Image (spheres, rainbow, N blue to C red):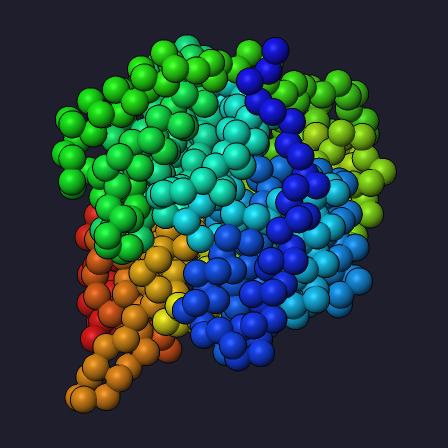
Amino acid sequence: MSVLKPVDYDEYKKVVPKFREGAEKFFNHQMNMKEYKGFSGKYGSYAQRGGQKSMLRLRMSGGRVTPEKLRFIVEMIRKHDVKMAHFTTCQTIQLHDLDVDTVCDIMEQAPNVGIVCYGGGGDYPRNVMCSPLSGVEEEYFDVMPHALAAAEFLLDFIDQDKMPRKLKVAFSNSKSNVTHATFRDLGFVAREDGRYDVYIAGGLGNNPKFGVKVKESLEPGKILYVIEAMIRLFRKYGNYENRSKARTRYLQESLGRDRLIEEFDKEFRKLKEEKNLYVDNFEDLRIHKEGEGEPLEESFIVKHQTNGDLYSVLFHPRGGLPSIETLGCLSGALEHMDQVEMRLSPDEGAYIINLTANEARQILEIIESEAARTAFETSESCIGASICQVGLRDSQDLLRTILAKVSEAGVADDALPQIHISGCPSSCAAHQIGKIGFRGALKVVDKKPVPTFLLYAGGNDEQGEEKMGVELGNIPVDRIPDFLIHLARIVEASGMGYDAWEKANPDGVKEVAADYLI
């Protein structure tokens, strides 16, 4: 008998009237911005900058977007004339510039297709992340079924008291570590033996920390024990007095690494004595499908899968902002494709998987005008200060400017890496672990404020090679494109791609940046 209870999606419709009551108070000026942020985050919605419109975050467990879910999103977009959708770095889909009626309608209808908004923000378990190509690429094993079980289990904790802020759980299927599982609040890292190493108390943002390994060779069936043990550990030792320190990574400071490991193990062992959380019936995601059509050549966006003669296609719209038209076309195409689905990526892209060669050609035609085709074009940005309440700089505008000017300059495809741009210290674009990262800032020069971004260089998120980027200083916003083009020219002249050049010149970015820093 399964220890996981079936999700009662109708329960998530019942929260809508309470949300509407609070939202109407805010938009009628009976609640201030700070109060509303504390209230609305639980429902997966926040007011945008200026307080006139809202965003809504749609959980996509493991980043999976089935054709049914994509159809629903497109239907809601068309019904309410939504102009902006965003693929987030936590593998969710956000809809922007919404009024209260639109938010409430989508929130109420979403559970009909298995989409939950509740707990999408605030101090609650966030969307469970998973390597997007798990099950169809070279990996230790398919971790997606375990991620889906974890997501289902965590829904029960949304209405419980004393949760850590933003409990982020991630599953990684290989050393590429695209979900940053070794430095999340809780990370399950696949091993060659079909088991997991478990890392806890990591995270980016202010005072970033890599995670602490607390379990080795954990049997997948025991993942729920780990999840609840982590929650109990924080309830017992977390800092509830200082909100800025109410994150699991501060347990490394308050307890120390050795005691953190010891106390986690105590909670884990207690749970095993108290209740049965062992899972032995994970969802079977294997597909059975024949290839069709002339084989395709692999490229940056087309990859041959490991499960038969099938393909995945990367759709990475600039800044994670797909056009509404393209989403509609993708939805229409997927409706007529057998066992095909979309998987959101933690860098604001998406993969369409389980495609025959003929189906892959259809998808390529749909995304042709929007899809990034180099690592640099997949550069990621948070939604930015034009929309986000806490943003300092407009990161999306900077990304658009960079992409346009670098393209105009005719820079070689491999001369620049993927760049990470966060509008503020929250690190929503993981600027601290990018090969090149920027974080929104302000510097006073000659008694005048100058809009800047702090430059970071040399970060690495690969498992076993994790490294935070070094903060090099402030660059005025308008000088950043010139800096990157200058850097690209130096890389081009070396005859190497960026990765090889960086390895050969560990201080190279610092030396180039010296002329641009203020």
